[in-house]
Amino acid sequence: MLKGLAITPPTIGRISIGRVVEKNGKRRPEKDDQFTLTTQVQQRGEWMLHPLNESLRKATTGKLRAIPVRFLFNDPNLNLRAEYSLFDRDTGRPVCVGNGETCKRVTEGGITTMGCPTPDACAFGQAGNCKPFGRLNVGIGDEDELGSFIFRTTSFNSIRTLAARLRYFSAVSGNLLSCLPLELKLRGKSTTQSYRSAIYYVDLNVRSGSTLEETIVAARELDARRRASGFDQAALDTAARIGFSNGAFEDSIEESAAVAEEFYPAECGDDRSHDHGHDNSNTPSAHSLKDRLDKRAALLGGKAA
Image (cartoon, rainbow, N blue to C red; front, side, top):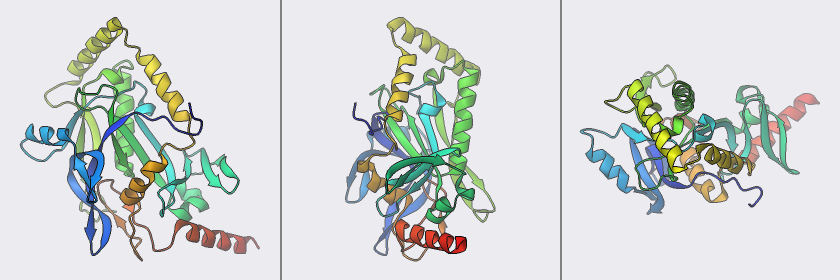
């Protein structure tokens, strides 16, 4: 296995609640109030829709606001990885990733492990706009049982809600999270930060028409069938855990351009927050991350002197 390369769940598509559109010659995120499933292929700057996107829409009378899903792993932390992340806004590549206790940061001497005081208490993070960044992998449909769709988000609401739900469902089912038939659900709320306009976040629940008790019974039946066939869920979780730990950062170089476009769209002279498919993302200023970090370092150095 190549060291330094994170081995992540095979991804066959993307889940978003927004899209990137071109306005006045600039590409920027635009919010939406429904899910969209795409492939990993772009044509003319647009992500191609996945066939499941149309089939799921036909099964609903309105907008696609619920998606039936299953999880690959029993461990909640393998299905949802959430970290404080600071990306280079020009390239989309990670600069510093931490969990509130420790972080891995790119320095002139390479990748260094150091303390992580959270973005509010970190001068480095405040200068570069460090924020929560979550990645959720889910299975949709039966075509590829080890393949998944990925939902990336910087929404604190989505990350907190999904983290809680995953742990609760794991607990009440007796650690059978991978066997539970669940659904992602889009919810709306208004806050003072959104000026009371609606923002949308992703929740997790039992599927429509089912109860929690029925869902747990179905999970136990599936677990029994899998065990009888020789399916080793514990070994799968272990393999995934080793794969994630093999690299310093999860996102690959190939994904950096997509991360930059979705979360750090090029926007001159505008640092206002925009609510879009990955709500609570911020647009960058005209200056690069390096320029702003250099200025911040100079200010800190002046104060120390």
